[in-house]
Image (cartoon, rainbow, N blue to C red):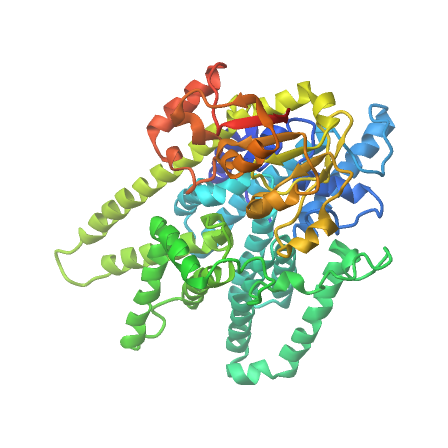
Length: 599
């Protein structure tokens, strides 16, 4: 498969580079980590990839990303290794090839550049897929722009996360599945399956694509040979293929993540479930995705679904599928369209049931974003052609009216998406104006004092590396993962020698228990969290040491640039304000942060 460069693909490249290239130089994904780990310091994903160079070499079972992200980690590992080799050959890199890497801006930027490249490739692949289905470059170009600026999908273009890599493999899998329906070559199916494995190793819930892809393969195979589906399912040819799939799966694991199969570390990796990437629904009390009741999850996700036109339109398409069934008309609706619509709606239900966490954000339905767009294009083109083929005289203007109405509707949606994504990028670009960044500068300037005594850091960020590189000397970190429910288990995770106790957002309701036996001398808290610790602060004689706060109340939320979370990002007033902030060094954004010192 090759990407054919034409004026439309060139245009997509130019637009994508112009909008997203600057994000390569902003090195972290979390709004807190983005400020704390500025250029040169590893963030959590960056730290995980750098850990691949530590003993044992190429171990995917590192601090944070043991369960997913493997192909992105592999590619980053290989590219960084090549850069290190080139640096040693030419004499500008003298550190050893192996061993954990700290404070290497070029390597962190490399990871972001890899993410950027995959994000761009996913846009080009989507264009290729759309054009392959509809044979219309103009429509495919517009659809690709829609995909590019879809806020909850675009986030992975500038967020250091492996999902954009997964989307690339996912679109390759879909593309070769479609090619198989048109020309049933087994090589197409195997290419689709390998890419499906790779995207599943990026994020486990991508594995649900196995069901529609295998169903499409079975239907296409049986149609080619003129046999019934039941006969085909139990035929020798199909059984041979089914037997070969686990072998391909195991071979792919051996290449991508050998530690999942071979234990080189004396039992360290034995707990890694070999087939974990294929499992998403696990209705047990130990599953971290099941932390809220189903009814709460249903209500929260329904609110989000109602805000996204692509979602409620696809629910409408599901009901429209009933029409050809009622009239028993064959060959009216494409089988691919039917499977895609059904799969999207089932997936939306799976998310409600299987992702019952405090993370209610549309980015979790990112894997079906391309299908949601393609489904809508398919039905719009179908209605357009149907109106144009009506034999009734005097109705020739209906396709034009339909096109105008659809264009106005889609243009309004695209304009809102473009505004939200643009403002998200502007908010990201102003991170040096944030209270988070000021806090980081304060810690850097006082690192000897702060590193000499224990400090509780409760800012509610994502989990962080086990070593803080922005203190001198480097500070050992102690934090408790959210899976720890029993307070008696805290002692198994808290490191008594750690100078910094970091409370992740998942564990904040238990944060006071973390410090019961640690006696920190400093507290770094948001104003909201200060209220939680109020009695502890008074009882232990803590006094405010310094405070960081936004210049104006309206600027408090601008550092949180997730779409659907920060409602400020959806207005032109926000665009104007963000540009003003970027050029005004005296303006500060973000929540109030207070540093307390024990008197």
